[in-house]
Image (cartoon, rainbow, N blue to C red; front, side, top):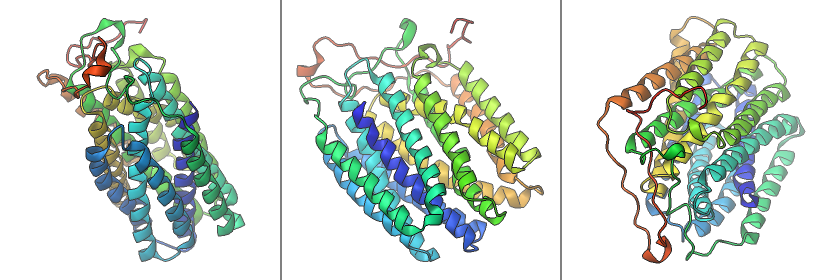
Length: 409
């Protein structure tokens, strides 16, 4: 559990920097399109770098890349806080998010290597809790520290980055000779047959949609609040509560074995999230929007846990996570510009909420369409014979034959 402090602290840096940069952009009179580019260019860099990271990462090189990307991300976070012009900020965001891509991809490879077989769900739940709480701390501290100036923000960033490095250096790594969750998958609960490739795709749909919906709220909503003279602490508090709800629920979902490889929670949570955003669109005032954003954490917590779990429990795990993180960038970029375009087409304040609600419904329909595809299996990675020791290799349950869960599930 101690190593989970690392993604928590790194996301503290990320969201402290992102909130401060974008709230400051709103104060300086940057347009919505300029704010979208500041938030979006980093996602493009994150997307491309994640694919590369997924191809090169192994259990053996993950720790070295983790240390290097931690140091680089800390330095670039401070640089982003100091830059105030549009073009230099674009360049700095690209470099920062390329380094962050290596950090989060390498951490997840490192995390699987440190997890004993059978412990993947709990580890992923802790990971979801950790990075979500770190994000919440970033939003809250940025909103609180913003008025104290760049010195306070930069000092906080440096202190947090240094703490990550200390935690990584102090961690006692699991011996490579021991079997880990990087080579061994968890069996689905209830003795279902092994999982097929479609659940991996469902996870990719989930993570893309969650980022498509969440990133505009994180990147554009603070600027909207700044333009309407809402104090920076308030949107920072709302986004912090959203991430806290996401983290606690994502951790709690790890205990719901019957929710894995099931359609019922997909339907309920997608529809509930769409209704929340629809209400915010119909009445786009701060209290209603804030309540909807906080409650949306229930959907995103489930989505992020499921996406990481499915990717980490099947096939080429580092590559799957690389695709996951690529879709984080792709969903973020698409969401930012879809919302920006949608607000021009929808003649009503709060058009971003309508665009996000529609995206949730389209995603739900797409995930159901996967159920009609032929069944095919994801290949498992080769495991050294010295580590197998008779351990079974698990794969995922069939979405097409998945019955609606009974009341006990």
